[in-house]
Amino acid sequence: MIDISVVIPAYNEEQYILNPLKSLINQSFVSCINYEIIVVDNNSEDNTKKKVIEFIDYFERKKKTGEIGKNIEILLLEEKRRGVAFARQTGFSKARGWIIATTDADCIVSPLWIKTIYNIFRFNYDYLLFNFLNGLPRKIRKNILKNYNKTVVGATGLIRFYDDDSYELQIINKLIPMFLGVGNLFWLSPALHGSNFAILKEYFLKVGGFNTDLKTGEDLDLGIKISKFGKIVFLPAIVYSSSRRFRKNLLKAILIYTFANFLSHRLLGKPVFNELDIARGQKDNLKLNLNFFKDQNLKNILQEIREKINFLKSDKK
Image 1: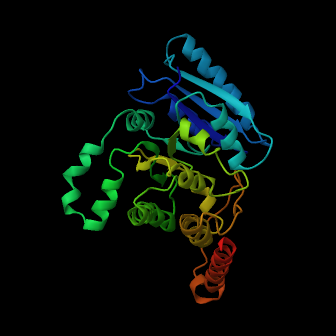
Image 2: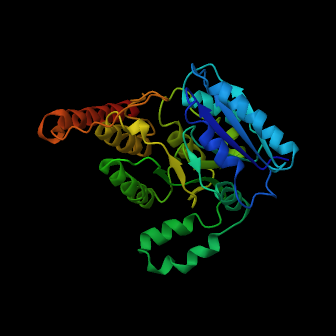
Image 3: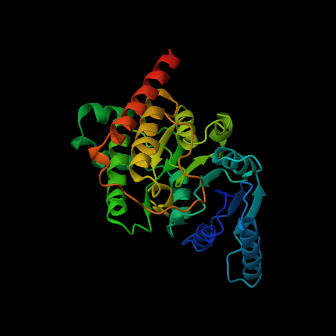
């Protein structure tokens, strides 16, 4: 019986795809956990598929000699329809585990990632809440207690850039926990992050899975849907990610594709921008325009966000 299925969507990831695979077969304290790794090739045009096949051959040879645990399986699936939502949907639908986890094709998961995910869904840690509840404001304490002993339907954790080779990216690495912490405190429920989350398969099937019309924010949308059946908790296991999707236009990525879309999903259930600014697999150089704050670019972006939010509000009515 498979306990955990890990789904990795991949499009043109030949340079990165071995990162998650190597980290996932070298997990600690997992001898009693059966898990599978499902790579979903999203119609790549490079050697992603070939790299995965070669790695699976290498893995199977090691498995036969006993150098790698027999509790791990690796599968390769194909999804011709381009889009991360399509790729995740295919992988999640074929998953055999009662827990489904996911990360990205350029990520490295921490050594206790699988074990931590298993423990969160296997055991109830709610009794630990009482150790600090007394120090919280009454309203927050009341809202937390509403979730006491509710089923854990999902868990999501932090990411950090492993290639923060610039001052700007180092700042973002420090701001990510703060940003997510404020958001989680405001809604008292973490938002699922595609690079680092896990859910119970039962509830994935109940809500019909991902919204494949979304090009971005499919993870946030899924979290909102499954949170109606239970609670989403913080996953205390970090995933290390490439910063390449932030490098083309750092400020736009933060303001629109992170901050604005996050708020829009939380408040309105829809993204402000249903598009990807940077194609998966594309390499970009970081060029931060220091004159950005002196011209109209920032004002234009903020105005664009405001107009989109107003449109979504009127559409919802």
